[in-house]
Length: 160
Image 1 (cartoon, helix red, strand yellow):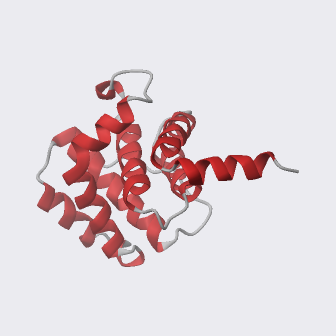
Image 2 (tube, rainbow, N blue to C red):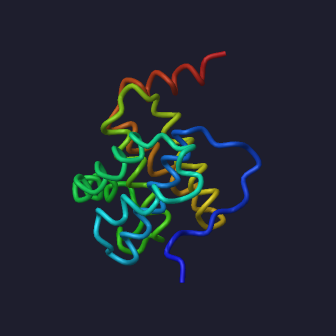
């Protein structure tokens, strides 16, 4: 039995950073379901045939960062959830953790890029409408973590 979420077919080639996010999602999914140890979760994807197309350093940073900050990230997310964190699907939970980690730790990446990447992960690996939920939660979190950037983006999208 596979412990990785099933990926839907993709029509476009993935960037190295997107591939890193996909591998990180699979590792977090495995951790959430099986509670496997972090070292084996980190080493396992490196043996996958397409791992060489991923940004390995970014994958490591995402996975280790989410592992080390998981409790803090869950607390940040809980404010914006409509149900207890434990009731989220493992895919939604993992995508939200990755998105929250990036919003908090990668200020050089525009928040809309982070949210769009999370939406794509949810579309490719999650349930039918999971991407809408991920979008709503991360958008609200972005306003908390990056208020100036989020406000400026919203203001510019309203202008003619």
